[in-house]
Image 1 (tube, rainbow, N blue to C red):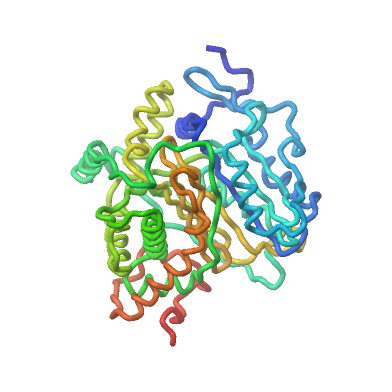
Image 2 (cartoon, rainbow, N blue to C red):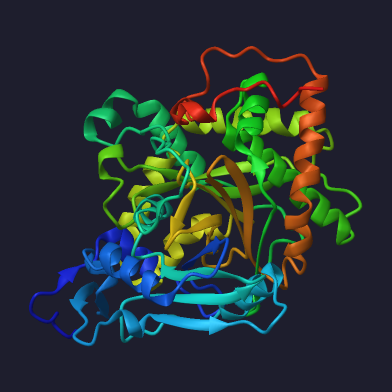
Length: 457
């Protein structure tokens, strides 16, 4: 093995594991899109990237791989110009053309001779600009990346700063915790070890090279929170129930006359303390949830998701999964693949929830109308779904294998109808009066409060 060069710093075990999860068919690359309400000059983007990214070695260092470990090494040729391009779409192009272009790039590996990220300032998206970024997952997870990227923007004119939302903290898997909660930890470990493979469906199979990117029109975050509160659930529960309906309709459109079983999704669970949100790298676990695509009733779907997520939050699957990823990152690549197959072989979908800025943001005076982060698939999973909040709105994004989900644009277009069906059912049903708001919701900033509009006539 070639010794690391001087001044090299090793990747953490978790980051090393994510680096090696790439396959030719499934690159572990996060896709981001910032869509503005006008034309943004290249110079403004360069200034933002230089100020925000350069202080972090992950964006200025390339990776030298060894048989056993990998190291960050300063790229002597680093410059923003090697990572940032400018593109003009043909006249008359729309947001659909932007998503089509992003889809065409999704299978292109990031150049290995430089830091593993790229950005493109795309002009002509309905007369506006969009900044598209591709960042390898080994640089950052969704929580730290969103914190970093949000800092590249300014508070939009007329907006007031709002404290950022945050999810509940989880206990580290310490020796003290293991001793105190040993029965539950052992039960969760046994559940992960002996978890059955997910049932066959048209969404599960060997991914190919062609990918597709799409995302939905916005939904009201306040309205989603109202619905969640009425049913003793969280915003995340509501959106997972909507995703379940979207996937159910997609399977039915592809000829599934009878859907008799749920689909298992893997959900990242944040393990990062709030005071470390600014640090890059990967610090999250993975938990498995049964998405109730087999249930026809929208309220039953919501209640099934709510109950499943509450059970997961009381357990330690997330902590165990993070420990497993860290162990895998210290093993030879073949052993890592075998070990982490516990997730990829036993699930069909990856769903992540990413919290963006609560207030409107801008660059060079141009307001950012849309913010999207598309989660990559992993290993043999071909369907990635993202729940993204920004400025009081929620969107659902898709980064999928076209062979397994050939029309994700139609799936994205169905999100509104699925949400409205759930809203109608929830408003026609007596409200469930929970104890205090579910813990994940208690962290939403006060302006995103309950306004009672979800069921207003």
